[in-house]
Length: 274
Ligand SMILES: [Zn+2]
Image (cartoon, rainbow, N blue to C red):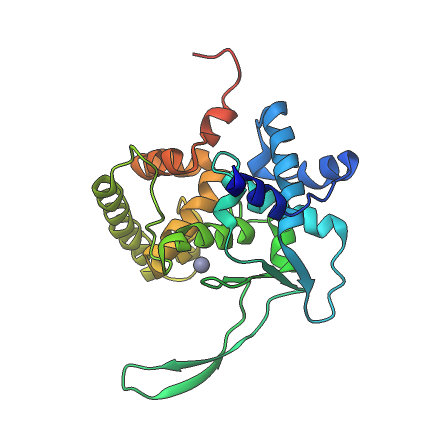
């Protein structure tokens, strides 16, 4: 009783999002396709709690507008629509740069020599720390004319955040009761090996043929970087382009359906069909 009272007292206040702004900002996105009205309303309410719980700041002189915050909140909250906002507990900052940012990093090469690198980044998620985003990339996800259908930096970074609920990002988030950890490992490692083979074969092709083969892959070839990146990229595709992910990797789709407790592919099928 006392505990629940304390929890209630500590809960941050929700920030109201105007309905017209909400509709305008969320309508272009692929992940909103087929989402039923009651689910949209729940997502709206979840975003209001998210805005109350997280601290947004613009970096590099970016003036972060209300619409930008709502855009980021909606993309972040679609992942936890059926899990709850508590899955994002334990950290509070979202830092947004106007475009890709170039953090200075020390990287040790195979010979043990430390180099300072400055690679442009679209987004980053820190264990127990902030999510950092490039707004140019956030906006790109809403551009249906962009070639990169399924590219969504916000879903990507927040998938890492869920993965980090049980330690470093490794493509193995905490599973729900009833999910099978061995099945999860088997499915993901088989798909990762298969996708790596396909992406490497595409990269070996020369010039335009190579580019066409990379473009034809069902998910972003960045997924080959690691098991953690594969999970984050597959999560982008799960919400944005399930019609590409599910036929290519049905077992991965099924594990994501169990994990996120959503079925974005089913939402695309016309109502009343068998
Ligand atoms: Zn990543």
